[in-house]
Image 1: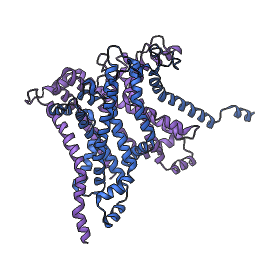
Image 2 (image 1 turned 180 degrees about the vertical axis):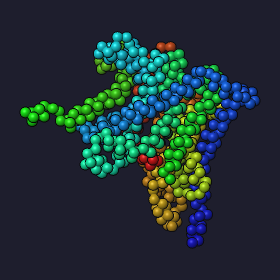
Image 3 (image 1 turned 30 degrees about the horizontal axis):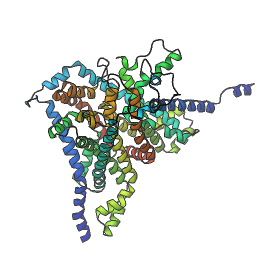
Image 4 (image 1 turned 135 degrees about the vertical axis):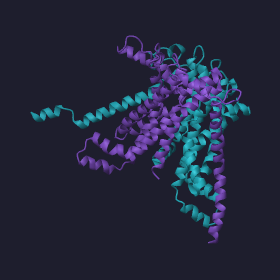
Length: 289
Length: 285
Protein backbone atom coordinates (compact mmCIF):
# COMPACT_ATOMS: atom_id res chain seq x y z
CA UNK A 1 0.00 0.00 0.00
CA UNK A 2 2.66 2.47 1.04
CA UNK A 3 4.84 1.32 -1.80
CA UNK A 4 2.02 2.05 -4.23
CA UNK A 5 1.70 5.57 -2.89
CA UNK A 6 5.42 6.05 -3.19
CA UNK A 7 5.28 4.75 -6.72
CA UNK A 8 2.49 7.16 -7.64
CA UNK A 9 4.41 10.10 -6.29
CA UNK A 10 7.65 9.12 -7.96
CA UNK A 11 6.89 7.91 -11.46
CA UNK A 12 5.28 11.01 -12.88
CA UNK A 13 8.51 12.93 -12.49
CA UNK A 14 10.42 10.48 -14.66
CA UNK A 15 7.63 10.47 -17.24
CA UNK A 16 7.40 14.26 -17.30
CA UNK A 17 11.16 14.55 -17.64
CA UNK A 18 11.16 12.05 -20.52
CA UNK A 19 8.41 13.78 -22.45
CA UNK A 20 9.60 17.32 -21.81
CA UNK A 21 12.28 17.55 -24.56
CA UNK A 22 9.85 16.19 -27.14
CA UNK A 23 7.09 18.54 -26.03
CA UNK A 24 9.48 21.48 -26.19
CA UNK A 25 10.59 20.42 -29.64
CA UNK A 26 7.12 20.30 -31.08
CA UNK A 27 5.68 23.30 -29.33
CA UNK A 28 8.57 25.75 -29.46
CA UNK A 29 10.30 24.51 -32.59
CA UNK A 30 7.19 23.70 -34.64
CA UNK A 31 4.35 25.87 -33.40
CA UNK A 32 6.52 28.96 -33.19
CA UNK A 33 7.56 28.90 -36.87
CA UNK A 34 3.94 28.24 -37.82
CA UNK A 35 2.69 31.18 -35.73
CA UNK A 36 5.46 33.38 -37.07
CA UNK A 37 4.65 32.42 -40.63
CA UNK A 38 0.95 33.23 -40.21
CA UNK A 39 1.94 36.55 -38.63
CA UNK A 40 4.31 37.27 -41.55
CA UNK A 41 1.50 36.64 -44.03
CA UNK A 42 -0.59 39.42 -42.46
CA UNK A 43 1.98 42.20 -42.05
CA UNK A 44 3.91 44.54 -44.33
CA UNK A 45 7.70 44.60 -44.37
CA UNK A 46 7.52 47.32 -41.73
CA UNK A 47 5.32 45.17 -39.49
CA UNK A 48 1.91 46.85 -39.77
CA UNK A 49 -1.20 44.75 -40.28
CA UNK A 50 -2.31 44.23 -43.87
CA UNK A 51 -4.21 41.76 -46.03
CA UNK A 52 -2.34 42.95 -49.12
CA UNK A 53 -0.09 39.82 -49.19
CA UNK A 54 -3.08 37.50 -49.14
CA UNK A 55 -4.78 39.54 -51.89
CA UNK A 56 -1.61 39.53 -54.02
CA UNK A 57 -1.54 35.75 -53.86
CA UNK A 58 -5.24 35.18 -54.42
CA UNK A 59 -5.37 37.57 -57.40
CA UNK A 60 -2.32 35.98 -59.03
CA UNK A 61 -3.53 33.46 -61.66
CA UNK A 62 -0.17 31.72 -61.37
CA UNK A 63 -0.91 31.05 -57.71
CA UNK A 64 -4.39 29.72 -58.43
CA UNK A 65 -2.86 27.40 -60.99
CA UNK A 66 -0.14 26.36 -58.54
CA UNK A 67 -2.83 25.41 -56.06
CA UNK A 68 -4.82 23.47 -58.68
CA UNK A 69 -1.63 21.73 -59.84
CA UNK A 70 -0.81 20.82 -56.24
CA UNK A 71 -4.16 19.02 -56.02
CA UNK A 72 -3.65 17.36 -59.43
CA UNK A 73 -0.19 16.32 -58.28
CA UNK A 74 -1.26 14.66 -55.03
CA UNK A 75 -4.28 12.91 -56.58
CA UNK A 76 -2.44 11.46 -59.60
CA UNK A 77 0.58 10.61 -57.49
CA UNK A 78 -1.43 8.55 -55.01
CA UNK A 79 -3.40 6.90 -57.84
CA UNK A 80 -0.20 5.65 -59.48
CA UNK A 81 1.38 4.49 -56.22
CA UNK A 82 -1.82 2.79 -55.16
CA UNK A 83 -2.73 1.22 -58.51
CA UNK A 84 0.71 -0.01 -59.46
CA UNK A 85 1.41 -0.98 -55.85
CA UNK A 86 -1.75 -3.07 -55.57
CA UNK A 87 -1.22 -4.95 -58.84
CA UNK A 88 2.38 -5.64 -57.85
CA UNK A 89 1.44 -6.70 -54.32
CA UNK A 90 -1.09 -9.16 -55.76
CA UNK A 91 1.63 -10.52 -58.07
CA UNK A 92 4.25 -10.72 -55.30
CA UNK A 93 1.87 -12.67 -53.10
CA UNK A 94 1.99 -15.56 -55.59
CA UNK A 95 4.67 -18.21 -55.59
CA UNK A 96 7.17 -17.76 -58.40
CA UNK A 97 10.78 -18.50 -59.29
CA UNK A 98 13.31 -16.24 -57.57
CA UNK A 99 10.69 -14.57 -55.39
CA UNK A 100 13.03 -13.62 -52.53
CA UNK A 101 15.58 -11.93 -54.79
CA UNK A 102 12.93 -10.23 -56.93
CA UNK A 103 11.02 -8.73 -54.00
CA UNK A 104 14.28 -7.48 -52.45
CA UNK A 105 15.52 -5.92 -55.70
CA UNK A 106 12.13 -4.34 -56.30
CA UNK A 107 12.73 -2.13 -53.24
CA UNK A 108 15.72 -0.44 -54.91
CA UNK A 109 14.00 2.84 -55.96
CA UNK A 110 13.01 3.36 -52.34
CA UNK A 111 16.68 3.08 -51.27
CA UNK A 112 17.96 5.49 -53.95
CA UNK A 113 18.10 9.12 -52.77
CA UNK A 114 15.49 11.31 -54.43
CA UNK A 115 17.72 13.74 -56.33
CA UNK A 116 19.77 11.14 -58.27
CA UNK A 117 16.55 9.27 -59.05
CA UNK A 118 15.14 12.46 -60.54
CA UNK A 119 18.35 12.99 -62.56
CA UNK A 120 18.00 9.49 -64.00
CA UNK A 121 14.46 10.18 -65.19
CA UNK A 122 15.47 13.61 -66.46
CA UNK A 123 18.03 11.92 -68.70
CA UNK A 124 15.65 9.16 -69.81
CA UNK A 125 13.02 11.77 -70.79
CA UNK A 126 15.42 13.93 -72.84
CA UNK A 127 14.07 14.51 -76.40
CA UNK A 128 17.53 14.48 -78.03
CA UNK A 129 19.49 11.75 -76.24
CA UNK A 130 16.94 10.12 -73.92
CA UNK A 131 16.56 6.37 -74.07
CA UNK A 132 12.76 6.45 -74.10
CA UNK A 133 12.68 8.49 -77.30
CA UNK A 134 15.42 6.31 -78.77
CA UNK A 135 13.37 3.18 -78.03
CA UNK A 136 10.15 4.70 -79.36
CA UNK A 137 11.88 5.81 -82.56
CA UNK A 138 13.62 2.46 -83.06
CA UNK A 139 10.30 0.66 -82.71
CA UNK A 140 8.79 3.07 -85.21
CA UNK A 141 6.15 4.27 -82.76
CA UNK A 142 6.91 7.97 -83.13
CA UNK A 143 8.24 10.16 -85.93
CA UNK A 144 9.07 13.33 -84.00
CA UNK A 145 10.59 12.96 -80.53
CA UNK A 146 8.18 13.09 -77.58
CA UNK A 147 8.93 16.32 -75.71
CA UNK A 148 8.15 15.02 -72.18
CA UNK A 149 9.44 17.73 -69.78
CA UNK A 150 9.76 20.33 -72.53
CA UNK A 151 6.06 20.28 -73.35
CA UNK A 152 4.05 22.57 -71.02
CA UNK A 153 0.98 20.35 -71.46
CA UNK A 154 2.63 17.16 -70.25
CA UNK A 155 5.65 18.17 -68.13
CA UNK A 156 3.79 18.00 -64.81
CA UNK A 157 2.61 14.44 -65.42
CA UNK A 158 6.11 13.16 -66.21
CA UNK A 159 7.39 14.79 -63.02
CA UNK A 160 4.62 13.07 -61.05
CA UNK A 161 5.53 9.75 -62.65
CA UNK A 162 9.19 10.07 -61.60
CA UNK A 163 8.09 10.88 -58.04
CA UNK A 164 5.51 8.08 -57.89
CA UNK A 165 8.08 5.64 -59.32
CA UNK A 166 10.33 6.21 -56.32
CA UNK A 167 7.57 5.64 -53.76
CA UNK A 168 5.82 2.71 -55.48
CA UNK A 169 8.04 0.08 -53.75
CA UNK A 170 6.99 1.46 -50.37
CA UNK A 171 3.33 1.20 -51.34
CA UNK A 172 3.82 -2.28 -52.76
CA UNK A 173 5.34 -3.40 -49.47
CA UNK A 174 2.61 -1.74 -47.45
CA UNK A 175 -0.17 -3.28 -49.54
CA UNK A 176 1.54 -6.66 -49.47
CA UNK A 177 1.72 -6.65 -45.67
CA UNK A 178 -1.92 -5.54 -45.68
CA UNK A 179 -2.81 -8.54 -47.86
CA UNK A 180 -0.92 -10.86 -45.51
CA UNK A 181 -2.86 -9.48 -42.56
CA UNK A 182 -6.09 -10.91 -44.01
CA UNK A 183 -6.66 -14.45 -42.68
CA UNK A 184 -6.23 -17.06 -45.42
CA UNK A 185 -9.49 -18.85 -44.40
CA UNK A 186 -11.55 -15.97 -45.82
CA UNK A 187 -10.10 -16.58 -49.25
CA UNK A 188 -10.49 -20.33 -48.98
CA UNK A 189 -14.16 -20.18 -48.09
CA UNK A 190 -14.73 -17.67 -50.90
CA UNK A 191 -13.05 -20.09 -53.29
CA UNK A 192 -15.25 -22.95 -52.08
CA UNK A 193 -18.31 -20.76 -52.65
CA UNK A 194 -17.11 -20.29 -56.22
CA UNK A 195 -16.31 -16.58 -56.05
CA UNK A 196 -14.21 -15.16 -58.90
CA UNK A 197 -10.88 -13.53 -57.98
CA UNK A 198 -12.33 -10.13 -58.88
CA UNK A 199 -15.34 -10.64 -56.63
CA UNK A 200 -13.12 -11.88 -53.81
CA UNK A 201 -11.08 -8.74 -54.19
CA UNK A 202 -14.13 -6.43 -54.05
CA UNK A 203 -15.94 -8.31 -51.29
CA UNK A 204 -13.07 -9.36 -49.01
CA UNK A 205 -9.79 -7.57 -49.71
CA UNK A 206 -11.12 -4.03 -50.05
CA UNK A 207 -13.48 -4.05 -47.02
CA UNK A 208 -10.85 -5.70 -44.79
CA UNK A 209 -8.19 -3.17 -45.72
CA UNK A 210 -10.47 -0.15 -45.96
CA UNK A 211 -9.32 1.85 -42.97
CA UNK A 212 -5.70 0.83 -43.45
CA UNK A 213 -5.79 1.97 -47.08
CA UNK A 214 -7.70 5.18 -46.38
CA UNK A 215 -5.35 6.24 -43.59
CA UNK A 216 -2.24 5.71 -45.64
CA UNK A 217 -3.76 7.34 -48.69
CA UNK A 218 -4.74 10.45 -46.71
CA UNK A 219 -1.31 10.60 -45.10
CA UNK A 220 0.28 10.40 -48.54
CA UNK A 221 -1.99 13.21 -49.83
CA UNK A 222 -0.92 15.40 -46.90
CA UNK A 223 2.79 14.69 -47.12
CA UNK A 224 2.93 15.07 -50.91
CA UNK A 225 1.08 18.40 -50.83
CA UNK A 226 4.34 20.08 -49.81
CA UNK A 227 6.21 18.55 -52.75
CA UNK A 228 9.06 20.69 -54.01
CA UNK A 229 12.18 18.72 -54.99
CA UNK A 230 10.76 16.77 -57.94
CA UNK A 231 9.55 19.93 -59.70
CA UNK A 232 12.56 22.02 -58.82
CA UNK A 233 15.12 19.47 -59.96
CA UNK A 234 13.40 18.53 -63.22
CA UNK A 235 11.95 21.79 -64.57
CA UNK A 236 12.43 24.64 -62.05
CA UNK A 237 8.69 25.23 -62.48
CA UNK A 238 8.91 25.58 -66.27
CA UNK A 239 8.43 25.46 -69.18
CA UNK A 240 6.51 28.73 -69.02
CA UNK A 241 5.56 28.22 -65.34
CA UNK A 242 3.51 25.19 -66.40
CA UNK A 243 4.73 23.04 -63.49
CA UNK A 244 4.66 25.54 -60.62
CA UNK A 245 3.04 24.12 -57.50
CA UNK A 246 2.53 25.77 -54.10
CA UNK A 247 5.94 24.66 -52.77
CA UNK A 248 7.91 26.04 -55.73
CA UNK A 249 5.78 29.20 -55.88
CA UNK A 250 6.54 30.04 -52.23
CA UNK A 251 10.22 29.20 -52.65
CA UNK A 252 10.42 31.36 -55.76
CA UNK A 253 8.80 34.33 -53.96
CA UNK A 254 11.06 33.87 -50.95
CA UNK A 255 14.42 33.55 -52.70
CA UNK A 256 14.08 35.05 -56.17
CA UNK A 257 11.61 37.88 -55.64
CA UNK A 258 12.77 38.26 -52.06
CA UNK A 259 9.35 38.96 -50.57
CA UNK A 260 8.98 36.67 -47.57
CA UNK A 261 5.59 38.11 -46.64
CA UNK A 262 3.99 37.09 -49.94
CA UNK A 263 5.80 33.74 -49.72
CA UNK A 264 4.25 33.24 -46.27
CA UNK A 265 0.83 34.19 -47.65
CA UNK A 266 1.22 31.61 -50.46
CA UNK A 267 1.70 28.88 -47.87
CA UNK A 268 -0.95 30.14 -45.45
CA UNK A 269 -3.68 30.36 -48.12
CA UNK A 270 -3.15 26.66 -48.92
CA UNK A 271 -3.27 25.67 -45.24
CA UNK A 272 -7.06 25.16 -45.00
CA UNK A 273 -6.83 22.33 -47.57
CA UNK A 274 -4.06 20.68 -45.54
CA UNK A 275 -5.96 21.15 -42.25
CA UNK A 276 -9.09 19.52 -43.70
CA UNK A 277 -7.04 16.52 -44.81
CA UNK A 278 -5.38 16.38 -41.38
CA UNK A 279 -8.74 16.41 -39.63
CA UNK A 280 -9.91 13.54 -41.85
CA UNK A 281 -6.75 11.68 -40.87
CA UNK A 282 -7.33 12.38 -37.16
CA UNK A 283 -10.87 11.05 -37.47
CA UNK A 284 -9.63 7.87 -39.12
CA UNK A 285 -7.04 7.39 -36.38
CA UNK A 286 -9.52 8.22 -33.62
CA UNK A 287 -12.10 5.86 -35.11
CA UNK A 288 -10.38 2.76 -33.75
CA UNK A 289 -10.56 3.81 -30.09
CA UNK B 1 -11.99 -34.74 -80.96
CA UNK B 2 -13.15 -32.74 -78.03
CA UNK B 3 -10.16 -33.91 -76.06
CA UNK B 4 -7.79 -32.77 -78.82
CA UNK B 5 -9.32 -29.34 -78.85
CA UNK B 6 -8.91 -28.98 -75.14
CA UNK B 7 -5.29 -30.00 -75.32
CA UNK B 8 -4.58 -27.28 -77.86
CA UNK B 9 -6.09 -24.54 -75.73
CA UNK B 10 -3.96 -23.00 -73.03
CA UNK B 11 -4.96 -24.12 -69.55
CA UNK B 12 -6.19 -21.19 -67.49
CA UNK B 13 -3.50 -21.83 -64.84
CA UNK B 14 -0.74 -21.78 -67.46
CA UNK B 15 -2.08 -18.54 -68.93
CA UNK B 16 -2.15 -17.00 -65.45
CA UNK B 17 1.48 -18.06 -64.88
CA UNK B 18 2.56 -16.49 -68.17
CA UNK B 19 0.80 -13.22 -67.32
CA UNK B 20 2.35 -13.27 -63.83
CA UNK B 21 5.91 -13.74 -65.12
CA UNK B 22 5.42 -11.20 -67.92
CA UNK B 23 4.18 -8.64 -65.43
CA UNK B 24 7.02 -9.24 -62.97
CA UNK B 25 9.64 -8.88 -65.72
CA UNK B 26 7.97 -5.68 -66.94
CA UNK B 27 7.73 -4.26 -63.42
CA UNK B 28 11.32 -5.10 -62.51
CA UNK B 29 12.56 -3.49 -65.72
CA UNK B 30 10.56 -0.37 -64.89
CA UNK B 31 11.95 -0.21 -61.35
CA UNK B 32 15.58 -1.05 -62.09
CA UNK B 33 16.40 0.43 -65.49
CA UNK B 34 16.59 4.09 -64.31
CA UNK B 35 18.95 3.02 -61.50
CA UNK B 36 21.06 1.05 -63.97
CA UNK B 37 21.22 4.11 -66.22
CA UNK B 38 22.28 6.34 -63.34
CA UNK B 39 25.03 3.97 -62.17
CA UNK B 40 26.46 3.27 -65.63
CA UNK B 41 26.41 7.00 -66.41
CA UNK B 42 29.17 7.47 -63.84
CA UNK B 43 31.53 5.23 -65.83
CA UNK B 44 30.73 6.18 -69.45
CA UNK B 45 32.87 8.38 -71.69
CA UNK B 46 31.32 11.83 -72.25
CA UNK B 47 30.30 10.99 -75.79
CA UNK B 48 28.54 7.78 -74.69
CA UNK B 49 26.51 9.55 -71.99
CA UNK B 50 24.70 11.43 -74.74
CA UNK B 51 24.29 8.43 -77.00
CA UNK B 52 21.19 6.40 -76.08
CA UNK B 53 22.32 3.53 -78.31
CA UNK B 54 25.07 2.76 -75.78
CA UNK B 55 22.95 0.72 -73.38
CA UNK B 56 25.87 -1.43 -72.24
CA UNK B 57 29.03 0.72 -72.12
CA UNK B 58 32.02 -0.89 -73.85
CA UNK B 59 34.56 1.73 -72.77
CA UNK B 60 34.67 2.25 -69.03
CA UNK B 61 36.30 5.29 -67.46
CA UNK B 62 36.97 6.33 -63.87
CA UNK B 63 37.98 9.88 -64.73
CA UNK B 64 34.92 11.49 -63.10
CA UNK B 65 36.07 10.14 -59.74
CA UNK B 66 39.61 11.50 -60.13
CA UNK B 67 41.05 15.01 -60.17
CA UNK B 68 40.97 17.30 -62.07
CA UNK B 69 37.41 16.30 -63.08
CA UNK B 70 36.53 15.48 -59.48
CA UNK B 71 36.59 18.75 -57.55
CA UNK B 72 37.83 18.24 -53.93
CA UNK B 73 34.89 20.34 -52.73
CA UNK B 74 32.65 17.33 -53.48
CA UNK B 75 34.21 15.56 -50.49
CA UNK B 76 33.18 18.52 -48.33
CA UNK B 77 29.59 18.22 -49.57
CA UNK B 78 29.51 14.51 -48.76
CA UNK B 79 31.07 15.27 -45.36
CA UNK B 80 28.52 18.02 -44.68
CA UNK B 81 25.67 15.66 -45.47
CA UNK B 82 27.16 13.03 -43.17
CA UNK B 83 27.63 15.45 -40.28
CA UNK B 84 24.19 17.02 -40.55
CA UNK B 85 22.34 13.72 -41.03
CA UNK B 86 24.22 11.92 -38.24
CA UNK B 87 23.83 14.70 -35.68
CA UNK B 88 20.15 15.22 -36.50
CA UNK B 89 19.50 11.48 -36.24
CA UNK B 90 21.31 11.29 -32.90
CA UNK B 91 19.31 14.14 -31.38
CA UNK B 92 16.01 12.87 -32.76
CA UNK B 93 16.65 9.40 -31.30
CA UNK B 94 17.67 10.76 -27.89
CA UNK B 95 14.53 12.89 -27.72
CA UNK B 96 12.04 10.47 -29.25
CA UNK B 97 12.85 7.21 -27.43
CA UNK B 98 12.27 8.38 -23.80
CA UNK B 99 9.24 10.38 -24.92
CA UNK B 100 7.78 7.34 -26.67
CA UNK B 101 8.31 5.26 -23.54
CA UNK B 102 6.67 7.79 -21.22
CA UNK B 103 3.71 8.26 -23.56
CA UNK B 104 3.20 4.51 -23.83
CA UNK B 105 3.11 4.09 -20.03
CA UNK B 106 1.90 7.25 -18.30
CA UNK B 107 -1.82 7.99 -17.79
CA UNK B 108 -3.54 11.33 -17.41
CA UNK B 109 -4.81 14.25 -19.41
CA UNK B 110 -1.37 15.78 -20.04
CA UNK B 111 0.00 12.62 -21.65
CA UNK B 112 -3.10 11.73 -23.64
CA UNK B 113 -3.38 15.23 -25.10
CA UNK B 114 0.35 15.19 -25.88
CA UNK B 115 -0.21 12.00 -27.86
CA UNK B 116 -3.03 13.71 -29.79
CA UNK B 117 -0.88 16.74 -30.59
CA UNK B 118 1.84 14.32 -31.64
CA UNK B 119 -0.33 12.79 -34.37
CA UNK B 120 -1.29 16.25 -35.56
CA UNK B 121 2.32 17.43 -35.75
CA UNK B 122 3.73 14.38 -37.52
CA UNK B 123 1.16 14.61 -40.29
CA UNK B 124 1.92 18.29 -40.92
CA UNK B 125 3.83 18.70 -44.22
CA UNK B 126 7.20 20.35 -43.58
CA UNK B 127 7.12 22.66 -46.62
CA UNK B 128 4.35 24.71 -45.04
CA UNK B 129 6.70 25.92 -42.28
CA UNK B 130 9.35 27.13 -44.73
CA UNK B 131 8.93 30.88 -44.36
CA UNK B 132 8.49 30.73 -40.57
CA UNK B 133 11.69 28.73 -40.13
CA UNK B 134 13.63 30.84 -42.63
CA UNK B 135 12.74 34.10 -40.86
CA UNK B 136 13.53 32.73 -37.40
CA UNK B 137 16.88 31.28 -38.49
CA UNK B 138 17.77 34.57 -40.18
CA UNK B 139 16.90 36.49 -37.02
CA UNK B 140 19.04 34.12 -34.92
CA UNK B 141 21.96 34.38 -37.37
CA UNK B 142 21.88 30.63 -38.03
CA UNK B 143 21.80 30.76 -41.83
CA UNK B 144 24.84 29.09 -43.39
CA UNK B 145 25.54 26.84 -40.42
CA UNK B 146 25.13 23.18 -39.49
CA UNK B 147 23.20 24.31 -36.41
CA UNK B 148 20.60 26.00 -38.63
CA UNK B 149 19.97 22.83 -40.62
CA UNK B 150 19.86 20.64 -37.51
CA UNK B 151 17.49 23.05 -35.78
CA UNK B 152 15.03 22.47 -38.62
CA UNK B 153 15.63 18.74 -39.20
CA UNK B 154 15.21 17.72 -35.55
CA UNK B 155 11.71 19.12 -34.90
CA UNK B 156 10.51 17.95 -38.33
CA UNK B 157 11.41 14.34 -37.45
CA UNK B 158 10.84 14.03 -33.70
CA UNK B 159 7.02 13.71 -33.94
CA UNK B 160 6.94 10.80 -36.40
CA UNK B 161 9.75 8.86 -34.72
CA UNK B 162 8.17 9.38 -31.29
CA UNK B 163 4.90 8.08 -32.72
CA UNK B 164 6.61 4.98 -34.15
CA UNK B 165 8.35 4.26 -30.83
CA UNK B 166 5.19 4.95 -28.82
CA UNK B 167 3.01 2.55 -30.80
CA UNK B 168 5.69 -0.17 -30.66
CA UNK B 169 6.28 0.17 -26.91
CA UNK B 170 2.55 0.24 -26.30
CA UNK B 171 2.47 -3.42 -27.38
CA UNK B 172 5.12 -4.43 -24.81
CA UNK B 173 3.22 -5.70 -21.73
CA UNK B 174 3.46 -3.49 -18.64
CA UNK B 175 3.74 -6.60 -16.41
CA UNK B 176 7.47 -6.51 -17.03
CA UNK B 177 7.70 -2.91 -15.81
CA UNK B 178 5.71 -3.70 -12.69
CA UNK B 179 7.72 -6.79 -11.82
CA UNK B 180 10.91 -4.79 -12.06
CA UNK B 181 9.51 -1.91 -10.02
CA UNK B 182 8.71 -4.34 -7.21
CA UNK B 183 12.29 -5.62 -7.41
CA UNK B 184 13.41 -2.07 -6.73
CA UNK B 185 14.56 -1.02 -10.18
CA UNK B 186 13.99 2.57 -11.25
CA UNK B 187 12.02 3.57 -14.34
CA UNK B 188 15.28 4.54 -16.00
CA UNK B 189 16.66 1.03 -15.38
CA UNK B 190 13.54 -0.48 -16.88
CA UNK B 191 13.81 1.73 -19.96
CA UNK B 192 17.51 1.01 -20.49
CA UNK B 193 17.59 -2.68 -19.56
CA UNK B 194 14.24 -4.01 -20.74
CA UNK B 195 12.25 -1.68 -22.96
CA UNK B 196 15.02 -0.37 -25.23
CA UNK B 197 16.45 -3.84 -25.98
CA UNK B 198 12.93 -5.11 -26.72
CA UNK B 199 12.23 -2.10 -28.95
CA UNK B 200 15.46 -2.44 -30.88
CA UNK B 201 13.75 -3.00 -34.28
CA UNK B 202 11.67 0.16 -34.07
CA UNK B 203 14.61 2.24 -32.84
CA UNK B 204 16.57 1.08 -35.90
CA UNK B 205 13.56 2.05 -38.03
CA UNK B 206 13.46 5.52 -36.47
CA UNK B 207 17.20 6.01 -36.98
CA UNK B 208 17.03 4.94 -40.61
CA UNK B 209 13.92 7.03 -41.27
CA UNK B 210 15.56 10.19 -39.94
CA UNK B 211 18.86 9.51 -41.65
CA UNK B 212 17.23 8.94 -45.05
CA UNK B 213 14.94 11.96 -44.61
CA UNK B 214 17.80 14.34 -43.79
CA UNK B 215 20.09 12.77 -46.40
CA UNK B 216 17.45 13.57 -49.05
CA UNK B 217 16.32 16.99 -47.87
CA UNK B 218 16.56 19.72 -50.52
CA UNK B 219 14.16 22.61 -49.86
CA UNK B 220 15.35 23.76 -46.43
CA UNK B 221 18.98 23.15 -47.34
CA UNK B 222 18.55 25.43 -50.38
CA UNK B 223 17.11 28.20 -48.22
CA UNK B 224 19.44 27.87 -45.22
CA UNK B 225 22.82 27.30 -46.88
CA UNK B 226 24.37 29.07 -49.86
CA UNK B 227 28.10 29.10 -49.01
CA UNK B 228 29.81 26.71 -51.39
CA UNK B 229 31.81 24.95 -48.65
CA UNK B 230 28.73 24.32 -46.51
CA UNK B 231 26.38 22.79 -49.09
CA UNK B 232 24.88 19.39 -48.41
CA UNK B 233 24.81 16.85 -51.23
CA UNK B 234 21.25 17.47 -52.51
CA UNK B 235 22.02 21.18 -52.96
CA UNK B 236 25.49 20.51 -54.33
CA UNK B 237 24.13 18.12 -56.93
CA UNK B 238 21.37 20.53 -57.77
CA UNK B 239 23.77 23.45 -58.40
CA UNK B 240 26.09 21.21 -60.41
CA UNK B 241 23.28 20.01 -62.67
CA UNK B 242 21.52 23.37 -62.89
CA UNK B 243 24.41 25.31 -64.48
CA UNK B 244 24.64 26.52 -68.06
CA UNK B 245 26.00 23.19 -69.32
CA UNK B 246 25.41 20.24 -67.04
CA UNK B 247 28.56 18.14 -66.55
CA UNK B 248 26.57 14.90 -66.57
CA UNK B 249 29.58 12.64 -66.04
CA UNK B 250 30.39 14.42 -62.79
CA UNK B 251 26.74 14.58 -61.80
CA UNK B 252 26.40 10.81 -62.19
CA UNK B 253 29.72 10.08 -60.45
CA UNK B 254 28.74 12.21 -57.50
CA UNK B 255 25.24 10.69 -57.51
CA UNK B 256 26.90 7.28 -57.36
CA UNK B 257 28.94 8.19 -54.27
CA UNK B 258 25.86 9.75 -52.70
CA UNK B 259 23.60 6.77 -53.42
CA UNK B 260 25.85 3.92 -52.26
CA UNK B 261 25.93 4.63 -48.46
CA UNK B 262 22.16 4.87 -47.86
CA UNK B 263 21.57 1.95 -50.23
CA UNK B 264 23.97 -0.28 -48.28
CA UNK B 265 22.43 0.77 -44.97
CA UNK B 266 18.93 0.26 -46.37
CA UNK B 267 19.66 -3.27 -47.57
CA UNK B 268 21.62 -4.20 -44.43
CA UNK B 269 18.76 -3.11 -42.14
CA UNK B 270 15.91 -3.83 -44.55
CA UNK B 271 14.26 -6.45 -42.32
CA UNK B 272 13.99 -4.06 -39.37
CA UNK B 273 13.14 -1.01 -41.42
CA UNK B 274 10.43 -2.48 -43.61
CA UNK B 275 8.71 -4.46 -40.86
CA UNK B 276 9.07 -1.52 -38.44
CA UNK B 277 7.33 0.90 -40.79
CA UNK B 278 4.70 -1.62 -41.82
CA UNK B 279 3.89 -2.53 -38.23
CA UNK B 280 3.39 1.17 -37.55
CA UNK B 281 1.13 1.49 -40.58
CA UNK B 282 -0.95 -1.58 -39.76
CA UNK B 283 -1.24 -0.92 -36.04
CA UNK B 284 -2.49 2.58 -36.68
CA UNK B 285 -5.33 1.16 -38.76
